[in-house]
Amino acid sequence: MPTDTTDQTIQNVVAAQKHLPGALLPILHGIQDALGYIPEQAVGTIAQALNLSRAEVHGVVTFYHHFRTEPQGRNVVQICRAEACQSMGAERLWAHACTQLGVDPEQASHGATTEDGSVTLKPVYCLGLCATSPALALNEKVHARVDADTFDRLVGTARSAA
Image (cartoon, rainbow, N blue to C red; front, side, top):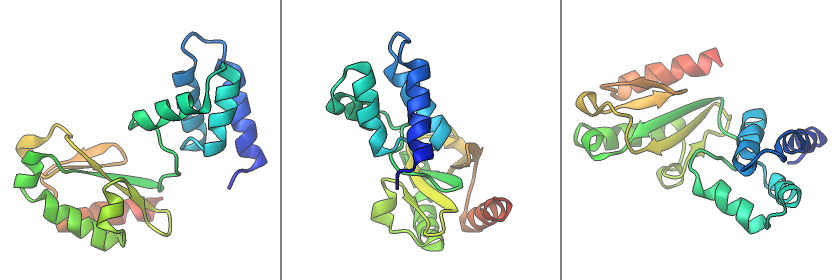
């Protein structure tokens, strides 16, 4: 739900960066850095400030996987689902993660957050640890040779620390 604080943050980021060459990407990064995601109401504000259509701004937001249009959990788990990790048990790990977190596997294939907002589960298609798969990244720190027990320990520790 939009708030005055959210709207003000969007306005501040846009005002500070709209005069930069190629301002759209810096503005999007600035908003996501400040809010954790790019709210829907930001699209119109950005479009108006940069004399772009809403469709152009929306197209950039949805094209780049880095940008999020929904808030993420306090912890982000990315499980590698590329071929090397698949061959070493990543699909079992993915299924375990979905079960443990209580998220629908189909929804999680596009990113899903637990009901309590503590964890977002997302697929990723290479973490560069192919020789030590399956791999995951937890809050951008990579872990190799992850099994169900390791997953439970890592996520449990992260949840209790957040």
